[in-house]
Amino acid sequence: MTPQAPPPQEPSGFLRTWTQLLGGRRVPSVGRRRGRPPRVPLAELLPALIFHVMQGPGTLAEHAARLFEDTLVDSAWADRRARLPWEIFAELMRRMLRPRATRRQTAAFWRGWRVVALDGTQFSLTNTPQVTSATTKARTRRGRAAFAKLTTAVLLEVGLRNPLAAGIGRDGESEWALAHRLLAQLPKQTLLLGDRLYGVAAFVVHARAACARVGSHFLFRAGRATKPRLIKRLPDGTRLIGLARRAPHNPNRILEWLEVREIRVRVARRGHRGHEVRLWTSLLDPQTAPAVDLAQVYTQRWEHELYFREIKRQLRKTDVLQSHTVETGAQEIAAIVLASAVLAAERQRAAGSLPALRISLPKLLDVVTALWQWVDLGDGILTGPQFDRLLKRGYARLRQCLTPPRRPRTHPRAVRQPTQAWPRLMHTHAVQGAWQYRIL
Image (cartoon, rainbow, N blue to C red):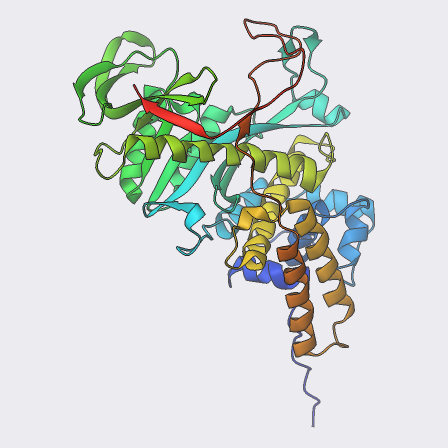
């Protein structure tokens, strides 16, 4: 009798988490090419790259050796990455990035709508000959910038800091252009938050269409230069206004009037001077969407800034990307975004009934990577119940290391070396106390 092949082993450690994140989907594939097949298939290359950006010192070859037995030297890995088309990573993000918060996690929802935010950032590229010949550095008041930049826009589920979609400007696209592209990936039943970049009629018209298509709404901070037309005042003190959508090359020609609700609210702390905030929303009914509640939910947009800090300073821990070309730099950013989705899933699993964002990302990264290593080392030695006990102990340790509740404080809006009309920051101090909201 012909001996039967042993059954395939279920992946463990990081590869098990990777498989769960895929949710039964396959990794994208490339078309057939001439010659022999690559030594390392995409099913190994893609998780190895994402595992690499989550680790500390070491090369991609060293970190891949911890996941797979068949490995390549560093130069072979670099050559393999350089030949990968960008569409592989774009499709991988579309398959893996999805909403994760459940209705039990009330911090991720507001009155039944999932709270998401849209914002952008820039990553610095290294000054290699391949990068400097393909990019142009921005001009500053002191000359050219030190590094070329890759702009990235992320659609984020703020309750978990979980990325839902990402756009990377490989061809020099601006945050504005990338944000328009991400509107097509807006989930159903969401409340979309955005800063002043999106608080203009030219973006509102696209956001309104995208939200209407999936039954969602938007809440943007209004731009300073836009002057709307008053339609009527609502009973709660807010206003129904019209925004003029003008022709791109003829500002005097008005194409249509967009009807939105404007909320003017003064935000202050007791004993301190406040400031006025203007918000535009597609939620027109004051009964179902009170103005003060909307002003409070808009403050969650700051979670997006904290997400960017996490992936730049706590996850990657480098000032510049480690890739040597623009294409591989975009691949590295995509891997960072996907790694943050892996950690968001682990953070949700570890939190249980506790607020997920109370679990510190550096502590989560330390414990989870240690668990992955012990599970890999114990494969074939530890039994299934022992594996489960090990994971439960790790998650229990994370729940014991919660960060304290965030203090209700703010720092003055000032800079140390002002170049415009900003006040100069001489001594650091913070204002504490609860926020007070008053509709104007």
